[in-house]
Image (tube, rainbow, N blue to C red; front, top):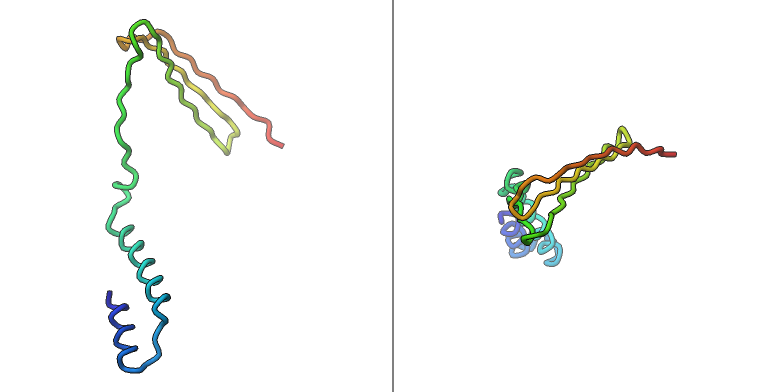
Length: 101
């Protein structure tokens, strides 16, 4: 805000000043910078907690996850099967090593 006030004073007193569009652009950028300063990294990195939701009665739910390690050129997957009561049925996992040219 101080810079905006300073530009107004320069214009009022006949000194060199920035065109209004440049001042508006500058203020928009500073607004974004201030927002990032005021919101901590912890707030930005927080995820909404998601609970496991069961399938309909009589169904089995398959939850899958995967990961990639770029340095080792490996990929892995994991699978868990549960029924509508949350009872564990089975699991599985696998690792895939890739040949990169």
